[in-house]
Structures are given as structure tokens and as C-alpha cells.
Figure (cartoon, one colour):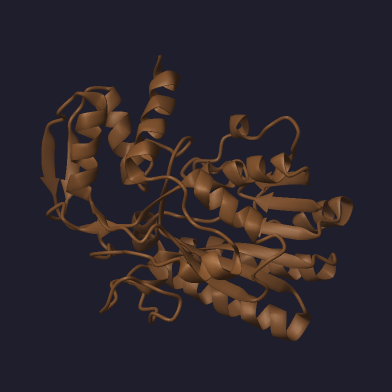
Length: 309
């Protein structure tokens, strides 16, 4: 198949590109390489085509017309909860207006299906755990709001314009290539500090939990969604809650370094807990997580350690 991956030079997107190429598909990466987004030209393998362009640019129509994709994997986004809380207008411009540009262009160029990177942030902090697809969505950040709105647009485009979709609501994705200098991704940020033998900051009380899912497992969910999950929305996680304090202690064990800790306040928009039951994804996509947190963190640490050497 011919597949465009928006945001394909980024952390998650580049692993999805790897998975699609491994299956023999023809892939084009469209990425703005925004400095806060984590997109790096070096993340794009030579076998993939690359276009440096923002998803809000009207010129994406030309790229779609020339490449003629059957599938669009839409992973280009403003992904930081902190940035979304500071600048909700910018967040919506990228995550809603950018999405609409991609969807309109997809319809006009004959794309069959969009695979969309949604987020567990659409749920906020629910009343009951684990989170499943039917859990009420009450996002606590502008980022979560835009991801929820995007799902409604996907339904509209399927019903009214015949553009199929599968949306994947990710837990906290971590792994190699995540930006350790960004504002999102506590595991990569901590690893960056541990490798420099610097102190870290733990916001709130550190007992807030997330469901950390390894990026290569997420890439396999995107591969499964190529021909499964028509019109479906799935939570993608491990069904395990892990606190920030537990992440810290695991990295102490992996690195042999006990980084000094400075406490910080709760970040605006942060939810208290998260835990995702991916039973529906297993049933309908044939996907389940394959990597436990300790193994994934060790692989991630070794990746960044090698980069630093």
C-alpha cells in the first residue's frame, strides 16, 4: 500500500514508518520538523520519501495528488499538555485546523482510510479504572479537548464523505527517539537527566500514575489498523498504572545513579491517574502490548546512553 505518515519524523511516527516499511509498504513522511515537536530528519529512513511541510499548508494537496496514498496515518500534532494549557489557540490551530486540512485533502485525493493518533488525555481523570472505550470523556487540558474533537470530525467524514478511519487513544507512549529535552514524556526527560548525572523535578506528589506503553508496541497497533478496525476507536495501553515515583525508582535501579529530586507543583491540565484496558483492541485488531515497563525502560535508557557516548 501507499501510505502517508504525517509527523513521521517524530518520536511515535518514525517507529510507525519503520513498521510499515518492514511490511513492504511504500511510505511518504510529511513533517514540519517543529522544534518543540520532536521531529528529526535523521529519524526518517532512506527507504521512505520525505517532504518538509506543515499539515496546515494548502500545498499538501499537491503532495497527496502526486503520491496518491491509500492510507494516511495522521500523527502530526501539538502533543504537549503544558504547551496546550499556555496557548490553547495554537494547540487548536494545529490539532483541529491541521486535521481538517488533512481530512479534506484525503477526501479529494481518494484516500481510503485515516489512522488517527488520539489520546488517553481525552478521558481526563475518570471515576472508575481501568479506562475502556466507553469511559466518559472529560478532558482536563486543551490538548485532550482537541483530540476528542478530532474523533468527532473523523466520524463526520466517515458518515458524510465516505472516508474510513481507525482512531487509537494512546496511553503514555515512551521509548527510543523521544525528545529528552521536551515538555512531554517523563521517562525520556528523566533519562536525559540521569545520563547527565543531574537532578530531576517531580511535580505534584509523584504518586500520580500513567499507563506507559512502549513505542514499538504502539507501532504494531498502527500496523494492525491498516486493514482492521473500520470506524473503530480503541484505547492502547498495558492495563498497568505506574506512578512517577515508581518510574524514578526504576531508573535508579537501571542506571545505578540516585538523582537528586526537587519537588514541583501540579502542572496545569495534568490528570491524576490513567490505566487502559485494551481488550477491545486485542479482540478486533489482534493487538496487545508485548513489552513490560522495565524491559522497555532499559532499552530506552541504553538507546540514549549510546547516543550520548
